[in-house]
Length: 272
Image (cartoon, rainbow, N blue to C red; front, side, top):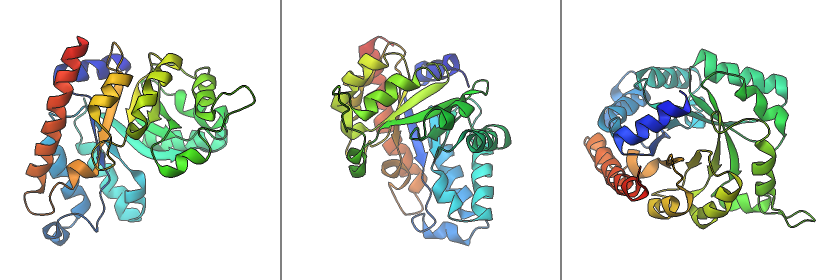
């Protein structure tokens, strides 16, 4: 999916919501466990209930890898079920030397047909550029994450006072463009989005941390929205685990609707 298609979806759906499909076999409603593929059935019902409210789905690959071969089957079935006009993110956080990253890229882009993959840039250009060689595919580079341990390295300053995450943003712009590269910036660091926007004004940002992690969509939009919106705001647990009963998909829709309504207002205020 190219940038124009993504922006069109945001404008037409009045939404920049990404739903994380962090589907844990230990957390899904118990009545699904009797089915042949409970993971896929859970995802299917979540997708059916929310596909008109979001512009992206983000399966966290770890939840599927943990199930072995059957988990990969559930993941592929889920991916095939997602409507083709919805952006898909393999939240895999891959990052290795060039030839290995090339294989990872082939896995997620050619074999599975995801639109994007999250990538760790710690090993430099070798670990990211292989993901940028595929037409209408995206690398989503980790920049400033919302987890507690993110502070261990991401804000270390060099002798010129530049923080590591700022160096990542500046250097990585030489690897790709705002048409094939996005950045992960945690919602609990929302006030720093304005600083980030001075470095990367046009790139899309994938912003996790809304809902269960305490982030505010209003704060994210205030500091991070650009002329094309430029945001994919993710909510996972706050939507998909809104209920553990038979009505789980209905409750998931209710939570997604709350966020989409806020996003509609924020887009209108920005003139989008």
